[in-house]
Image (cartoon, rainbow, N blue to C red; front, side):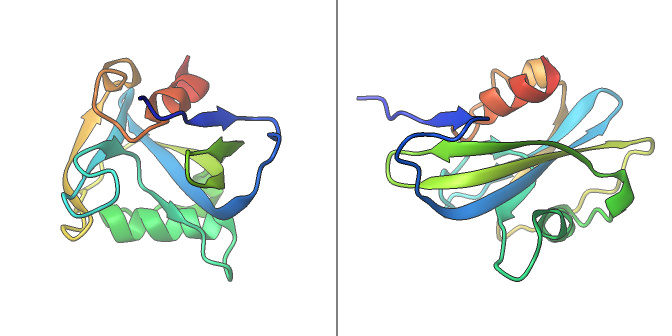
Amino acid sequence: MEEKYIYSESALDDFNPKFEVTSCFIEHDDKILLLLRQDHKPQPNTYWMPAWKVDFWETHLEATMREISEETSIALEESEMIFITKLYVKYPDYDFIYYIYRNILDVLPDVRINPREHKEFLWITPEDALVLDGIPGLDECIKKVYF
């Protein structure tokens, strides 16, 4: 039986978020940066953009900046971050609030992934990314931002 995942811009019935997650579509030359998760991580061998949980002492923008730096070694300016949306997400076992940002780069950055978390990275068009094996919800997020 296929598991059900819901990504909604509206509050959901019986919604009880356990945590907040933030992420960013980093773009260059009409392509987005996606990271391939390590074998030992939740949802192994799937693609996703830089993302992680928001710690209780930080804002979702601060968490986004921190995670991008930790996962890719890319240093971005807060002033260049574009807030896209806040989503209410229901997974079979838990709910969470999800923030999506976007950053458009003029110069291709030197990406150095954290090997404890990711195996590789790629730059890919949003359209081509729709056929990748992504974390549940990747397609929905790409469609909300790009189509």
